[in-house]
Length: 408
Image 1 (cartoon, helix red, strand yellow):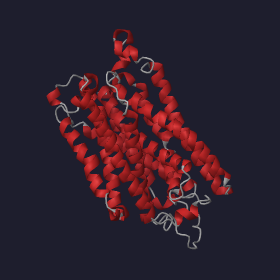
Image 2 (tube, rainbow, N blue to C red):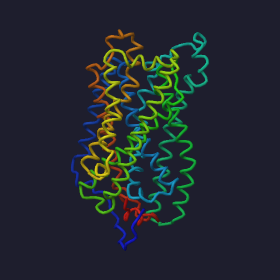
Image 3 (cartoon, rainbow, N blue to C red):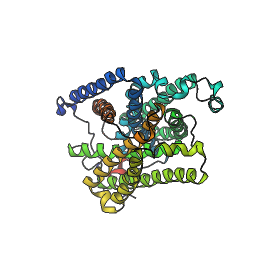
Image 4 (tube, rainbow, N blue to C red):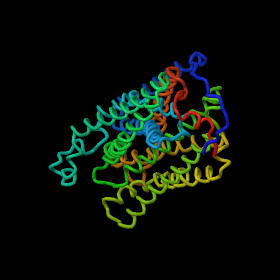
């Protein structure tokens, strides 16, 4: 709902990269150093490195995928409230070419991660049954198709958006909406298969019909959290004043709260159905994550990923308080990383026959965190470099007035 009092259209606003001095280069240097350290570690223990790198890759991949999803939803639903935050979503989504480069070690070392890679499908009935999907050609082909789709879709939506900044043609909004309809269908398929091919296939004996939705729930929530933090950082630096307001924070907070509940609903539904059916091929996933200290992480995720942010965001003032909202967003991103770690790393210990009583977090967890921080630093450099190339918001979008004058 919008107020229709007279308001002057906001002037074009571009990010001034020179004010940051050497910060972008420092971010790049830190990122290269961190990733270089993990790559050196990879030369010493390629199998352990590959699993940790997969966690880091999936973390940045799902954040960017979440931002692309919200960009497509904005156009498909013809939203007005999100116009002023849309350019930030577009810029994050356009980091996919960099993220594709991060996938290269996994692309080249699938045999270190996926047990089925080195097994003749004719010697395992279950693998043979799934061999149409779990084979070398399909794996490489899907990786190229998936990353190509996300990068191409993000580039298309942003290029049309920037083109409208120059021409002001309202027909471009209609064109973007039409592309968004098709894009959302493809997005649902590709994000689901990404979860299947890159995470669920770690144990080809296990399967879940809810896995794609589970990965999507984490992606959408983490994308929202990233946009909340980025928009507040820019406002703290003096940008987007009166363009992105507490009213936008309120809606972003409501959506973040909604997807916190949605994630919990999907996670509980999957667990409850497997617990009730008690089929060994299904319950093995949760049994392995209740061994050793993984059990403590499983319990912590229940409270840390759901109950704590649920209570943190449930009230209206919480969604309008910048400090509380930013803390909740940062917390959810941290929990999203731990959730991905919980999905992926136990399989490494299963594959290497670690004693079940000794399974759990290791000191090498710090190297996995270093890989994530390295990727985030490099992506922050790329993001900052992209900001000055266009206005910080779609300055000639037909719905800009409604977004600027938004009230809840």
